Image 1 (cartoon, rainbow, N blue to C red):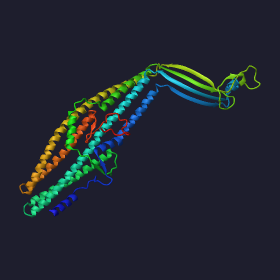
Image 2 (image 1 turned 135 degrees about the vertical axis):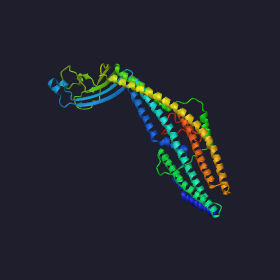
Image 3 (image 1 turned 180 degrees about the horizontal axis):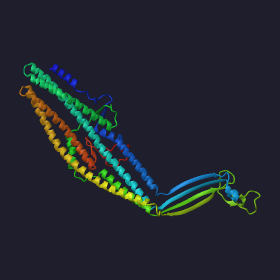
Image 4 (image 1 turned 30 degrees about the horizontal axis):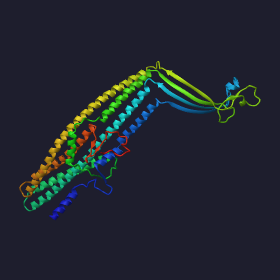
Length: 484
């Protein structure tokens, strides 16, 4: 039997393609939990959604600023080279050096509700974007698990095809030995060889599909194309069944869906936008207060004292009783109330109001569509979970029966009680049963994960933990990944 084993091993190595993910020293060992963590850390979609949150945070700050007091400090220095008014009228206008410092304070008293509505619209937009981030994280969590499990499934299919090809090689060797001993016909030898030849392209195709699936995993995780990856998570059917049963038995009300909440906040922002546009039709009242100091020195030089007017400040030889300023800082204060009402602006305000009202109606329609879509997806996910549970039970039973049938067919053939056709048919049925069993296990797990996503629940992981992707994601890129 030893020569036969050597021949079988050599034939298997010759026809089985070397796996592209063969473990090397630099192989990345990747569990499904690691894949989810890496996806939520490095995904361009998550980063783009997070940056959009940063943008809306800045917009909220800008909107609030309009309702707070505005203070501006200005200082100026002016030197006049030649003053025509002083030459024509009086030298009293001939102030060559002017220093001026003013603190201007403005406060909007009434803007027709524009400031409050704009701040509300900005906050609602920020909340909508945060919900978008949560929805993106939930979707990507399921997507990366789907890609991971698809690669694992195709790896198993490739292994099954390789094992199937090895069995075909063994059967060719065995049939040739039986033919040499006169216990098998030439037809059986030819049939075994044709069967092996037909299985070779299937094994190659399975290996190619596996490699393509790994490329998709590398793309989602931003890995190098030539980075070797070893998937370490194997779904245990019993664990998957427990996760699915728990999801199917959960009768609690659904949590608010992030996509629906986003549409609600967007509609609220649009309604606030209508009030902002309507404010252009109302009057405005603003208050302004200026606190300043002015210095007009006769000689160039920065004044260092407060100003006053007295006879002592006059130069020697001045007329008796004359008073002069001492080149210091003199206070300059004033305040004002400004009332304005745009009586006619060419219908610009009306156009803006009509536009805002139309956008608000579109947002309401989008909200209704989001609610309908969420309800439809939840119903579809429940039905898919029920179908996956039924298929899972049937496929497991079918796989066990196919394995028993193949073992019996092999024993009957070895004892000369059946034909090679019976063994080949049993082998094909076993391959199909094992493939569909693996696919049913993966489908059941993904059905439970997708149902959790559309219901706004934490996404389950194979190890029993969950990822609360629908909660506030402020630390999605910087803090620890919240796995429970």
